[in-house]
Length: 264
Image (cartoon, rainbow, N blue to C red):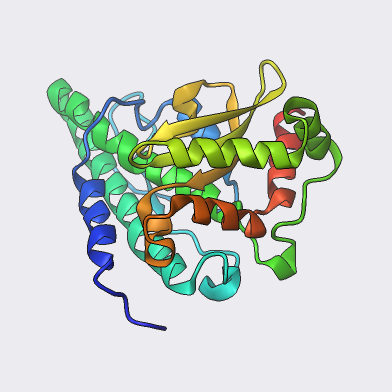
């Protein structure tokens, strides 16, 4: 594998931000947040229950671990380089998990002590790092090597719904690419199904906000990471080129399975 260049400095800066970011919050144990975890990536998010003495009414502390990828780092080339995939998975996703677990442990301690000030103070870190874990766990499942169907257009019910809501798959891709390119700073562009109204929607979220922050009835089918760490080492600052090429390895089969499950 080629060595990482000086461009890595910009990527590494985001790792520091992951540990320090503070923002508004949905609580780490919010039911809608947990439901999105279940829909978004049932096979990727792994948990272990710690043996703790929990206060009355508290269900015990769960921590999260880095999921294995269902493909090798180089399997998405040339759309996404092996170097990016390894750094993105082993460094960035792991950083979100490490900081999420740390915040959850501090939250558990604060709740046990009745320390309301610390509970409130921790919410930004829980949202940012927990959202980073949820979002990336979905992202890995949204990708597949070409030899395993990556890039093949959606069929059946999801394919029909895309044609009905957006006119065509090409129109949807153009819309998501435009919104992803226009997103200022860092964030995500999503294709989701609204369970309440049974319709497809395109949304963007800032930073590592999970899609549930846009509405509890939204189920993520496809999320594209537009943080620079997802593409800079390969595409430099040309985000539109990254967005154009990532469709070559999109796993529409997985998105279709989530869509059908959400509307059952």
